[in-house]
Image 1 (cartoon, rainbow, N blue to C red):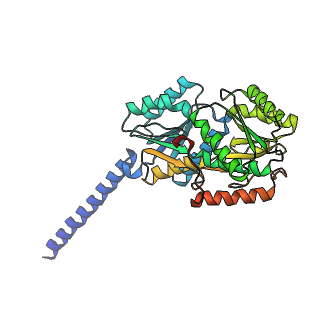
Image 2 (spheres, rainbow, N blue to C red):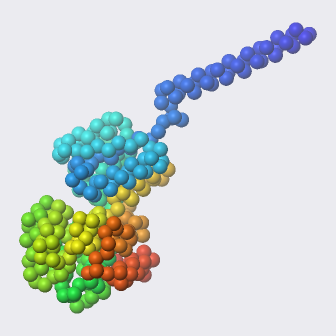
Length: 343
């Protein structure tokens, strides 16, 4: 009887051991084959141009990589040399089976429309423009809220009651800058005159400089740049003639704090970070999302974010404090800045 009991126990123990080995082998097999339990999310940031020539993309890449580290996502940034290369890079990211593919700006629209439509089961996101497809998240900005703060700061700082803006083109997108600025200016200094001229493109510093000089000749002591690469011409004119100016998207005051005294900010790092975060946490949805002052998507140097540059006396701390109060009122809803494209 004892021998029979020992035999049964031996069989039971052997069965348990074999089952354990089987489970271990199965687990190792899944790991070797990249089973779901071991798989990391993979995301690609595919940009329509080289990062180095555009600080807008530098910030976005920083936010993208920061989120990748925090949420343990495998990230890859792919830069493009021209429009044809960009579409090829998008298709390559699809072929490499990235879980989420992010891109940005109107430069990417046409190619992404084609690639996303051809791959309806793949998730995409595009920053700073909108594409109406069921598998694309379009991330926009309420630039007019940041422009409102800039206009208010200009209206409180001007000594001549004449301020200007050199804008890229007279198109709907740019109205979010010109109309937002004008509204902020009028809210604090209704007697101030607003001068605005359009370069006719995004890459013409010479024409932008010419227009800035015209506005200076009319008495403007503050002239905002809103012409992309053209802003370099505005900055050059400011340095030559001694007027004050502002940059866009990133903190441009560090380039010449004596003349570039403010910068309207667009936080591409924030939106890239949040996009990765949402996908990693399973809350990512296609459709349009917008970032304004409340979400830290837009802002103004010294008001919403600190700067490495000392505050210029032309603006002064008293003005900054007043503009901070305006910012708080916009965030709380006490002040509603109208979207120029919805009026």
